Amino acid sequence: MQKHSVLKLLDRDHVDNLIRPDRILEAVKEAFILHSKDEGQVFPVVRQALSTGGIFGIKSGGISGEGVLGFKAAGFWPANRNQDGEPHQATIMLIDPVTGRPLCVIDGNTVTTLRTGAAGAVGLELLARPDSHRVCVFGTGVQASIQLDYALKVLPSLREVIYLTANGSTDAHFESRFCDRYRITHSTHADGAVKISDVVITATPGGGSLFDAASVRPGTHLNCVGADTKGKRELPAGLLNVARVVVDDYSQATQIGECQWHEGIVVTEIGDLLTGKATVSRRTDEITVFDMTGLALQDLTVARLLYQQAKLQSVGHDISWPW
Image (cartoon, rainbow, N blue to C red; front, side, top):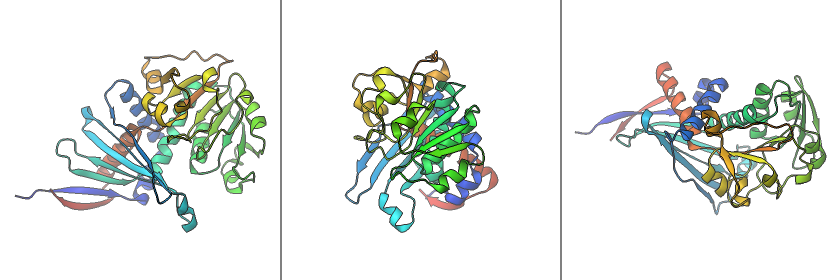
């Protein structure tokens, strides 16, 4: 006899109505803690360039103790901009680990944006000096905006924002998001902007070093987002050798993150800081770096949260699914 289950579909509007940034932050912390305790599985990442000009990736994993299994298929299609579309595309699927049947398909764009921003916030809470007052941001896209938004929430001492753009021009839309709360200025001098900043956020496509290592002064913390594929980088050669380096996952960071450029580098996983397996004594003259490559567990803890909320609130499209 054929069995039927229910497959729930959550599109962009469903996700945007359900998602809460504060709960996303807690879900991301949970993902890092599960990873540290070996209670969550992270499977090898797929990340490949396409002949169509895009980059396609799959991040997958599971939380066996909580009946969670799934993956996110995502990537970057720059030509979408020519159609007024978002170049970053992501779709998440939750799967029943007992039967293998699909449970929920979720638009992953907002999830990816917020969970990455929340991960950056965790890095800032643990590593940035609490008296940091000036932040320098490379990039003005979706990820740069969310990283800055979270930074301004978790570091209340921040008062000034300096931003840099790829084309050297100001970005009025980006400025409008923050100018009512903070002093925000545009710079065309990367080294000078970095030299006077307490926090540096790099959220670019990762096409190459953005500044000189000598411009990073003692006590600076850097959140690095753009290196998520082999061959990408944002940081200059030699910087990681003089910094305390924290990563979300050692294997990923050394394969596709900034750490791919520094063989044998000693790193700490951020989950170990949350569980107490490792500690950071933040010296005022220490440079710290959080190399963020993005964990499947981040996507899954957030997706599980959205799936549970959607069922409770009867949100989404329910489809009968024979199996």
